[in-house]
Image (cartoon, rainbow, N blue to C red; front, side, top):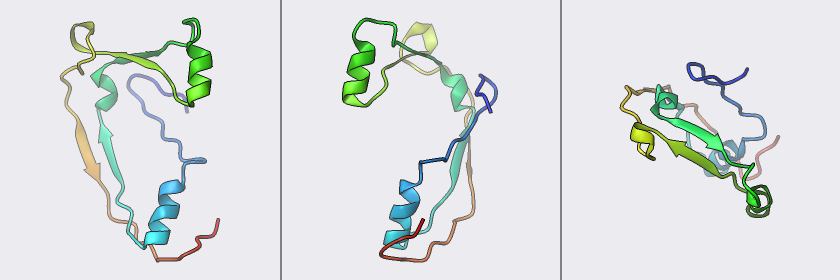
Length: 98
């Protein structure tokens, strides 16, 4: 699902390290999501700048330019609604399976 200004997309594929840690520690997982936070500002990836693509690969991180109110790195004032789901019960295992 493509992500747009008014629509979010969640990707969990290959992002399950937190589940593995919760299983090893025997701690429950509490699902939380914030609606409206994407309206807080705009962002652009700046790979076209000379050397940024190389530096990004070398450091294994993405450089993103963010702006909001008055084109400063200050978020816009928008309502954000936080939804907290029921805890996902986790049974403790020293070696979690796939």
